[in-house]
Image 1 (cartoon, one colour):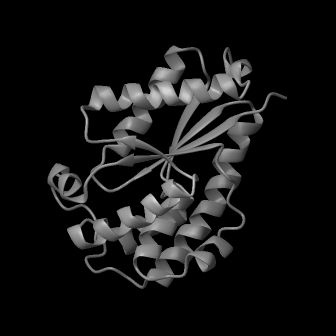
Image 2 (image 1 turned 90 degrees about the vertical axis):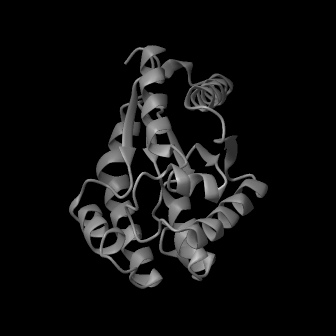
Image 3 (image 1 turned 45 degrees about the vertical axis):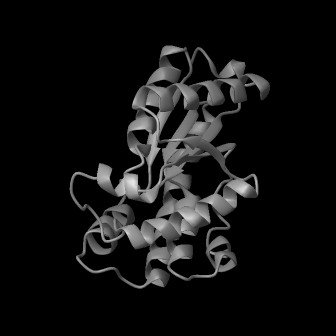
Length: 206
C-alpha cells in the first residue's frame, strides 16, 4: 500500500485559505496526483454543532468549550476521513487543522500544552503551511462578518500565535498579501518540491 501525504493550510479569517486550499487540490490533480480536499470544522455532526453553536451563535462561548469541541471533531475527522484517504495513497489537503485550535483558543488565553494534550490523537501533518496576511487586510477582505472570531483584536492575537509556530519551524510561511494567482503559484511550487524531495512521486497515477 502506497503512503499518502497529509498537508494542512492555516491562516487568519480572510487570508484566502479556503480558496487556496481548493486551488492547490485542483492543481495537484492536474499534475496527476490523487489529491482530496477536506476541512475543519468537519462536515460531521460535531462539526455542524461547532458552526451553529460556537462560530455563529452571536456570542463567543468559553474557549475551553471551543477547544474540547474542536478536539472531538478532529478525532472523528482524522478517523473517518483523513486516515482512510491516506491509507489509499492519497494526498489529503485540509483547510485548517490542529494549528487553528492552538492559534484561536491559545489567543483566547488557554495553555498551549493543554490544547496539545487534548489533541494527542491528532495525526501530525507532513507539511503545514501558514498563509500570512496582515490582520487589517484580512478583515477588509471579509465581505461580511461570518463568525464571532472575525474581529481585528482576535485576529491580531491569533496571528501572533501562528508566527510563533513559524519561528519554531512547525509552519511554513507563505506571503498571502500578493495576488491570488501569485499566492497559489508559491504554494504549489513549495508543495510539489516537498513531494519530490520526500520521494512521494509514486502518489501520481491513482
